[in-house]
Length: 214
Ligand SMILES: [Zn+2]
Image (tube, rainbow, N blue to C red; front, side):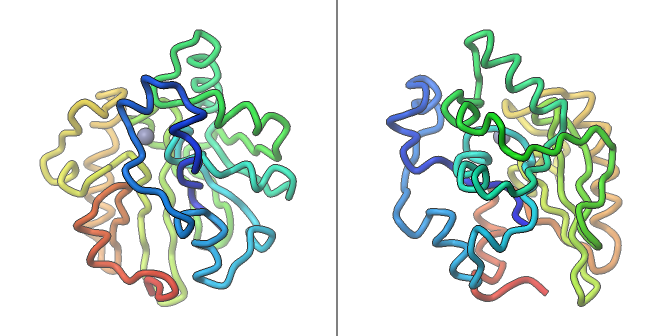
């Protein structure tokens, strides 16, 4: 099961100019391609049984095209799909880009509208909203009995949870503040840890492929 698919390698050329000025790609090399990252853990795209998308921003849906022809189920909150298309149709994508989504028309989307949905045993997608209208996080419980909450962009940084604030990347404050105390409670439980979406400090403390969290 794969959570999110990174940014399109050619986004600087194919995506809206204004969007790429706001979120330029600083570094992208061959090793950052999805197939190369999967290969580090000895997995091929066709081995992936399900793709879960936290939300449809450019840096989370960029390389999902690989899974269209493979007919891999792509789980997304229905609300996220609706909102992204609503914005793009009005010509104001924000951090959504038409060139990411247009090629995915007809992919094996599985829209979910449940608060929680069990993708597989020990892997649960949970709606949060907050960052975007249909944002979801993933709870993963390993064979060792540890639970990791992969936050996508609900939290970019762990610091956001500590200070209970998100700054300009906040979509819906009411939704975000409804979930944050729940997340804090969940993380306070034994054997429970966060994997925040963009936190370099946290990233530096975790093992890198082919090593894995246990
Ligand atoms: Zn985002």
